[in-house]
Image 1 (tube, rainbow, N blue to C red):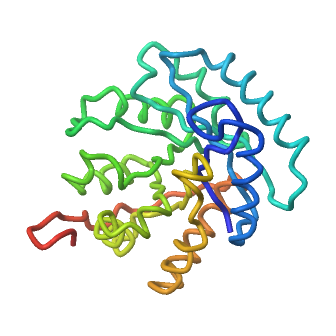
Image 2: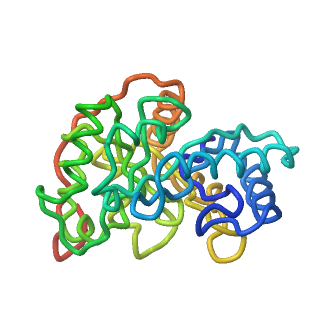
Image 3: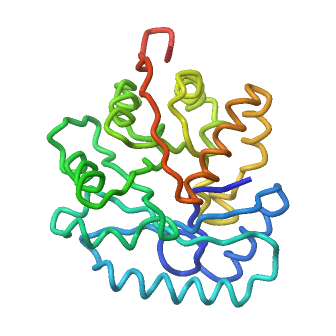
Length: 252
């Protein structure tokens, strides 16, 4: 199994605050059957330049890899917040792609409403057209704008993006309705624990995997295959399909 979104690298963002926490998180994921972990610390353009971030990430990665004795394959990436990259040359974001592939994990705005004129939509287009990168939208189900207007999911896929959801949202009753609708519409492509620490945000990949398998084994297998192809740098493009709708009875 592949965990596509984590904050396990020590002392680099709001994730693991020590090497001990990093090792505990990896141990928990290995116990849950995860064999590959993508390390995706936050990148915020307004706080640091890309070169500084890459140097800091490399140091944290060396520290973790030297100490880790388990069997999980560790891969480098980041969670790039496009809303904070207004003054960042889009070409400088290319090294933030997942393990040197054509895919980049992108975080969008948490504002309550989106418009096609928002900066991050321009950035998504530039990443596709100028850098040849395919954005994978981090924790798509968590954005207030998309929860209010779930048709944004189809619009993002139509624009060439892929969507990742969090394990906690598969489990959490308050988010489960939207997740189920996105899954049934074929609008989920990747899965991540988005784990940050062993106490408040531990990885619950195993529990989410069990629920997804019980719900639809083919969807589960398809998500895992998508992530394998991404990490092998194979091209992926999906039809948006019918948009999810929000009704008085929930998401359909």
